[in-house]
Amino acid sequence: MKVLVTGSDGFIGSHLTEELVKKGYQVKAFVYYNSFNTWGWLDTLSQDIMQRVEIFQGDIRDPNGVEEAMKGVDAVFHLAALIAIPFSYHSPDTYVDTNIKGTLNVLQAARKHNIGRVLVTSTSEVYGTAQYVPIDEKHPFQGQSPYSATKIGADRLAESFYRSFQLPVTIVRPFNTYGPRQSARAVIPTIITQLLSGKTEIKLGSLTPTRDFNYVKDTVNGFLSIFESDKTVGEEINIATQKEISIGQLAEELIRQINPEARIICDEERLRPEKSEVNRLLGCNEKIMRLTDWGPQYSLEEGLRETIAFLEDNLSKYKTDIYNL
Image 1 (spheres, rainbow, N blue to C red):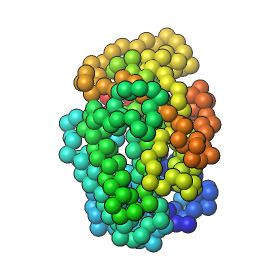
Image 2: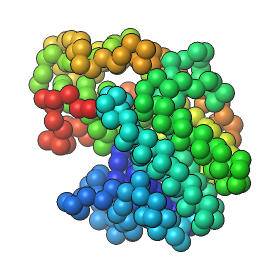
Image 3: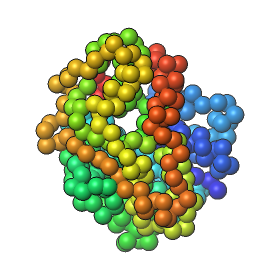
């Protein structure tokens, strides 16, 4: 089977591309065109993997390029998106163009080419602060940032193409994913890279919000389990551990592991607007475990160890002296 992965040059996309190749799929990787001819994290994969990947350079906002990329494929994993919440506060137009219009381009091309499966990547941010826990797929949506609002819009477009045109869509909704290759705009690499660079004052925003963290390999296995199940078409499905930890507790654990002399200080620049902060995310994984054979394989402690080891080896790739939007 030949599959297209949009956003394959990114964090989760590169891990998914790698695993699809290992499982024997023919993979076409849609990477963001740039004049440096760089393919993001795919550039770090082994030659053995990359010689089995077909690269397509384009822009998810361009309907013509998306349609061309989807010719001859049997399925698409749509991960391409703008995801940084702080950046969405001052550039919301680009999030509409990328997340909503980009998803529309994928859906239209999939419909035209009769693609057999379409997996659209959502985010737990669409739920906003938990109104009840664990958060299942029936939880109300709340756009607490321009980012989350555009992902709600993209999800509902995907649902409409399933209901209106019988397009075989599944909405895949990972809770917070972390692990090797994640950018420092996310909280775990932000903490770890500051600690590894020798800083003793670790700058963070709010410490009280809780999150449900998936190690990236568990997230990727969630995508594959959903894709390989015949029960998931037309569904939206959480990928969650059903465990939560506060940002403060997480930071203290990483400080304990890396540099017990460090302390946390609040950086006001990193605080979300009060009504935009998502205070609690704890996902329900009953549905994915009922419809597929998926289950989390990594504990938070195991995942953090692998993430720390990766960042130790790749610290030069991270700018630890600035706030990464």
